[in-house]
Image: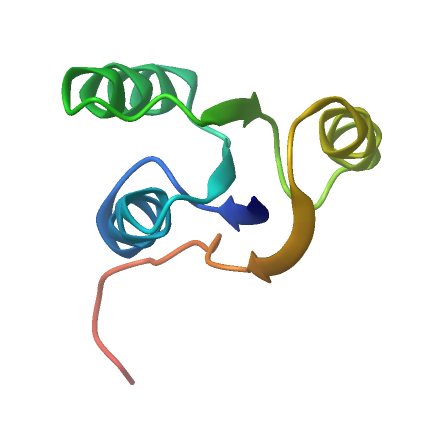
Length: 96
């Protein structure tokens, strides 16, 4: 089994990437900074029958995230195959 890490995974593009990776039979580590969004994503995945994933609620730019990620990588099934660095902040407003 292949394993992937997806940051910014609780909604939007990140969440769709997670679903696509899970549908292909991979294990996925979901990361997001928003606990309520991450819980909602986890519940939605469970309702859709996806079970091969775990979550890390943390800022992807923090050292604590890297520590938790290292632990999760070693304790979950599969060979780490890829990382989708999707986390980011968007502020909507005028371009100029």
